[in-house]
Length: 306
Image (cartoon, rainbow, N blue to C red; front, side, top):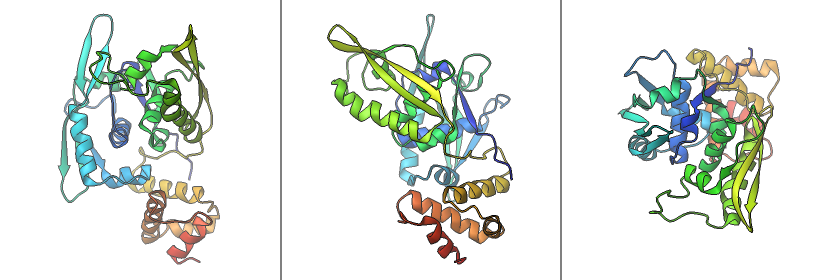
């Protein structure tokens, strides 16, 4: 079976550089939602997010209350999008409805923000969905979005540290909230270096940054961006459900080093073995299963093949 093309999220640059703050759980929901959007979607379309699917592709466990909190925050949290003529304050979601007992969330997008999300004619940022999921730091997720905007150029524009911290919600432009990481060394340690390490390890980008002094103090930052071939295989959201599930199963087996065609065929031919494979992968990523030395061997034992 051929590997599918990596799913790209295309997001208007006004959104990429807007000022907003999200938790990691909120961002995972948003990235999944963005992968479902189509330009031809009608006004009022409901988008279904299956909790199980989201957890399987991210390898992270979010409990029911965390999802409730995340979608509630997404409904109330605002994007601030500004140009020379207008300043728009807008929320992402118009509604979020949980279908009890089915692990299903139906999301409705605010119509005011829809054009920024799906109008990709000339001003957009594209970034890989799987890469976005792979980043655990919310600052890494945000900086990855910003860096993706400049990947075809090789370096970003120069951001003042004030503007950069405002974009990451580390500084209130009105000065009403206390500024975070006022020391540049702390900003590097807890935000920049963590983000660079995660992005370079898990995504299609290799980034670095330079801090620029004015006088004796650092005033600005610039990112340098190159592309690389990511380790992850693409997530097949655009395939039929069962075909996509089998493709994801192949990816998991490949990541574990299981490449024997006969063995792969035996596992993929039986639904119960595929179910056990997904559970093993989920438990491995969430730390419920420990298998540092030989996870492939442990999996085959669990599947009853060895």
